[in-house]
Amino acid sequence: VYKAEGQQKALLLCALFAPFAPQRSMNSRRGGFNGRRRNRPWEGGEDEAGASGGPGEMDARAGLGGLGGFGGLGGFGLFNPAAVEERRQLAARMRLAEQRVMEMVMERVPEEIQPECRVVVFDPCGCNDVSCEPSGTVIQYLFRSGARGATSIPKSIFDITAEDVAEVAPTADVLIRWSAGERVPWPPPPEEPDMPTPETHPLRLEIGARVRCRIQAQTWAEGEIVKHYYRETRWPPGKWVPYQVKLDDGTLVYAPMDNDRLIVRLEERE
Image 1: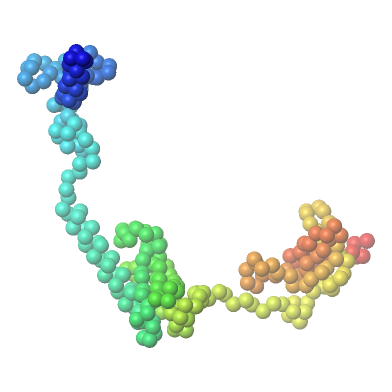
Image 2 (image 1 turned 90 degrees about the horizontal axis):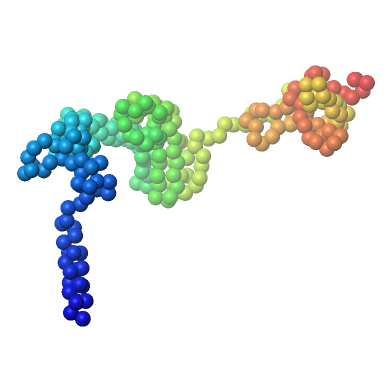
């Protein structure tokens, strides 16, 4: 029993003092790198050939942007008061420009809803860097009702004038409707132009006429005209084609132009 207790005490002492024991590299018999080590200051003499980590090597590393005495650790740049002051001045200039634009925007908000409205001006790229290539300025309107709207000016925030704001600002009616919680698009979508009529754009072929349509460079297919002045919802405003044709196999196609190079009456080709 006494012998077992002695072994336990010895193991405990080893565990306590292990962190203070000299550490040896796994690939070294003398504790250095690759079997070589630098002499300690109290040992005197020359360092072994090839030993790393000497004072000269650390000084060389420090000269590459590191910090002497820390083994040449990178990332310890010198403090530059001039650069800090320049960044501070640029940030102050940005804040003044934002405040100037916000005041111009608020002047165009109806007085009765100004307490309900907050204007935010920012750079869409998000960097807020005055040296960045200007990509435009976003003006956002936030209301207590939770509604919001936005417009933009394709200029740097430093170049915006009152005329620029007046050109893109929502109308008073839109702002009031935003403050009431309505979702109103701004800028408004382009107006849909009037569709053509037989009086404005007369066509050669009537609905129900049997026709042949060119569906490929050298391929024609027979069918019947089912609609005049056809357009699809995804097309831009003002875009339309003269005919929609239902082919004999049931496929719906359209003729983009009203000429005999693309669509002809069936009996005219026979």
